[in-house]
Length: 364
Image (cartoon, rainbow, N blue to C red):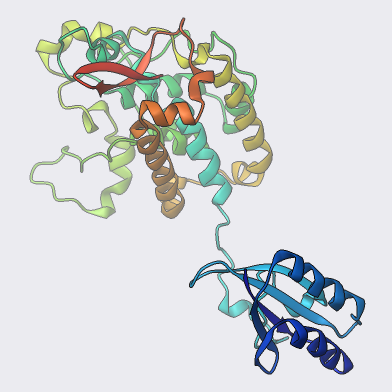
């Protein structure tokens, strides 16, 4: 292997290490050596350096893995002379440098993590409808859309689960979720419900709900005003006063679709029947209650006050969803996802073409 030795020794230690390193490697600088050496030879160098080491000794060994990459192998003596990569600092200061640093860097990283993860648990619940399962059934020829898209159905199920609870209460409920906690939901087009407002949900639940309902596409600008042009000053009305299923589904009010709406809100088994799903939900909710306690207490309006956090939370969910859905049968087998499969759970998220045949790919 090709290695480089760097000495940051001081006083008498510098001459001692030079005698050892000169015997094994070529000196290519005042404090630098390089050579091709076997692993046994490298161990011998380290042993001799440690034998003569003092408080002023500091020698690092770097393995040149390629023309563009090296790897720190070991350090003999004072480790503080190098960083964790074996790099030597060229300047030190005791001056206050906080003014040059981002004091707010990633303060909301845990919010992004848990909001996108919990939204990920719920985001495809709407695929468990009879109508969606008919749509992706390889043996059935049916229309390629539902009056209410699966994101909207998933959102309504989540909204039902949260109900009138505050954030801490619904997270506690999720940490102890049971098989029967989604026995009912709001059924648009069938039940007479009042106006749907995101502001009816508590702060963190509102963020999760927003991620669920927008995980395929963001809503278009509102059509509630003639000749309306998109304007950010109306953003509050976009995501509250004019929040409805027409955002991402343009045929839910189509008279010709009324006979299909019933199947759009009739469910096969939801993922909540899965022990693995409930286990993941319980652990995520418990972690969220602990790690987001200060944020939950602040009741931050994420959709209006923290758009950066909201945007990255959605980006995380969308990227994960696209990546997992794109995996082939072979890749899924490598990832050993068969432990999530259950032959008794015949509800699916998508299909794939295997040769000339269309087949189910991933269970919901």
